[in-house]
Image 1 (tube, helix red, strand yellow):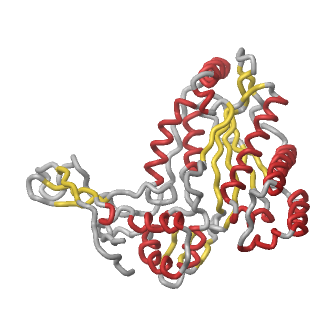
Image 2 (image 1 turned 180 degrees about the vertical axis):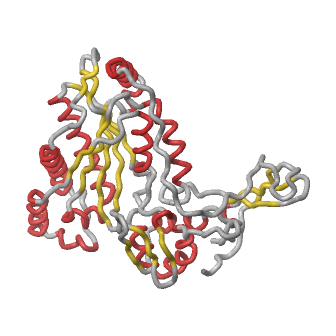
Image 3 (image 1 turned 90 degrees about the vertical axis):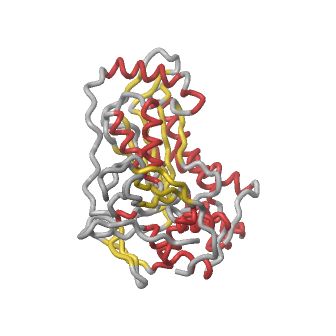
Length: 397
């Protein structure tokens, strides 16, 4: 793992700390002091090496004066906060053509606290069950109350604002659906989708039915803080507490325009536990970051890394899933029909411009790129020169 010097910064510009810098400074020592799974270790190493000489890259070289600017490759790990912005842009452009021109709702379903130790020990199973319970509930209610099939996109998050472990699913649901005979678009009320108490009860019931059957089939494994649940009496107590728990579900309407809905959704699809924009200060004693409004949270760098790595997903796990009209089996058949019928019904008004990003603190200036005019001599054009992968022993922090 090789560190890279920070990019050039314009004089007088304040440099904001970045999450990747925390990993580069404190990650190697954390890796030596803690036993991590191969998947988590790989994520830590990827973030440390991202956009450094360790991954190679290219230099933008002026053909006139020889000025040189280095550009290192990204790791493209889905947990890396540095890589998610570009990936979200690509995903947004690809999904635009699959949106139904109607209003949408934002539905969030959360695991109760009693389930979190089991989810930590069985992440793939519990997350799959949560996805299934939420999607089946939304589709069943749409079939029962609208006699129609909606489009649903669901995204898993596992954190709260303090980076604690808090699994929940965000869903964007169309305000209506395609009738099962394929003849018309059935809209729902513009400011109401389903009663949240009904959503909560159905999600709990569907989840618990599958959860108990998984335990009876021996598919659940208990370790760490959930090890005591191997005892049948302890598991029975957990089951009772989960049935009694409040499964928090809420629904709110996001933007009605298709582009704004997609922009809104992209904030959730490629988000990681924390972004660099929330960092306030970083030193060997504490990492300070913003939570809600003006509140902040202060963590030791080791605790910061521990909480971040809690949210590494199982290898190959799909955290973005599509159901109903958005399901892959309907993309080429029912979805175009629904788009046409919904568009004709709604008589779309002129598109509103997508929301502009909020102003942020000054960041590191962007170094010149291939094809730009040289900022030194202003005569030459920058050309590409490949850089090999750096090889050598790890550099201590």
